[in-house]
Length: 185
Image 1 (cartoon, helix red, strand yellow):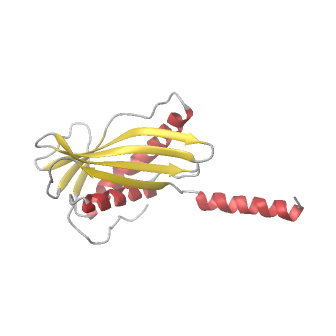
Image 2: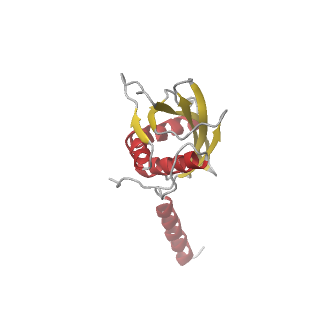
Image 3: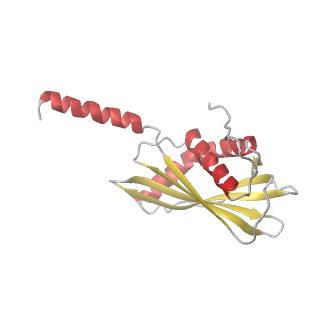
């Protein structure tokens, strides 16, 4: 490889790394369970205890990335949902759902890692009817990165946007307006 070719390859690699910085792709798929349920007005968002298996590299990386994402989810997800017609608050110790609040739980499901395809994390969101204590909706949240991802507000907003889109498509959230997000920090 010539000096110019080698320098060009290094510049290309640096440009690609820069363009991938902050890149975590997300995809949300959903499923309505049981009988049709009317639109939901209010939710309490609960992160279920759990972690990815820490016995392997994929679990260790997945848990580290989930721990980085958690503060952004806690802050941004209720705000994003609330701006788009679903009154939401984050569950905290000692708080119980109020009358009329459904429960939206988030829990880690799996983590994988491959040197060629990068990190993939899967979480599950479940919307539970508090009156009958049964799930009425589930969503699978898939997140992937080649290793350069920034697990913060952008990922939390992307998850919220896709959850809102799925809830609307599944007729559990009223509204068709463009999705609004609070200002970024």
